[in-house]
Length: 119
Image: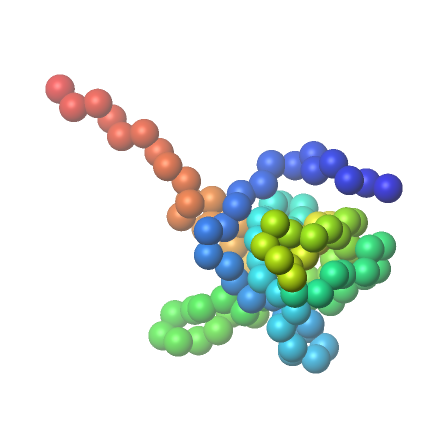
């Protein structure tokens, strides 16, 4: 079973909700993201080696909501350090361009860049 993360991840200090694409019910929060996967933080454990249809709802311009639909497979799940919460790692199948744009935006927002030295 795959348990080691081999891709760089970016932790999100604030979490975005993740929904079941078909029922539109929340299933957890986005914990970490990468180009090829994501980590979900949920109150229930997630079935390992199962496929999931996920939906991200992002705040958009003028109150509109941007929706990103994802198909993913859960590779691992374990209890979080927070009681009654679980962390689950997913690999994404053919993530849409909107997901890549989200990753880029989050990297820019949560990155620190050195300022040029003043003379």
